[in-house]
Image 1 (tube, rainbow, N blue to C red):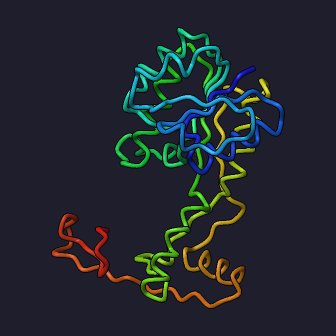
Image 2: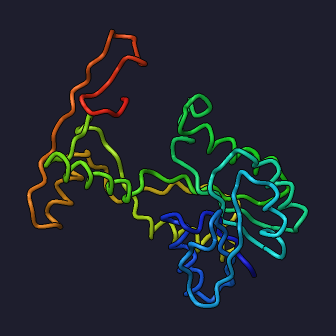
Length: 237
């Protein structure tokens, strides 16, 4: 059995390569920049950009299963090449926003939904992992803390259930290696729903230091204006 892991420089993909290698599974690590990968000894690498169909044939040759990031740019070509190569199973790293009724109109959900639908319409067995917010998404808060002395948040009381990337990699490994788990969808979340302020407090406790939270107010040109709406930071809201 050979598993192709796309996005092997990503947070989840890099961990999945390690987990599969530890379990003795043959792994082919795909990346648009394979020369920049740090891989376990003996792990094969291949150039694979998911928006470049010319990469697909070589990457998929001899592959049984694929861990696929949800990039819709050339998904139809990827599916066609996977079918031609004899791939049996594709695990999709998708988003839990796909599970909402308005997913097709949601800018976050829509690309993930397009990939799920393309796989579902094919002859391949597909297994979506509908993931909540990644725990690693908190890392950019360090920039705000260094620059402002506080973590700036426009909505500190909003909730999320951050899931550890290692847990997603372990789940993906289980689905890739156990045929009994294939063909379903799995909603992956962290163990607890937290406000962003609570999330910061947990990080502060682990770091052993105070980390202030600064609410960033909105300044809008009107009640229905989105293009003129800005926070006091340069980032659009």
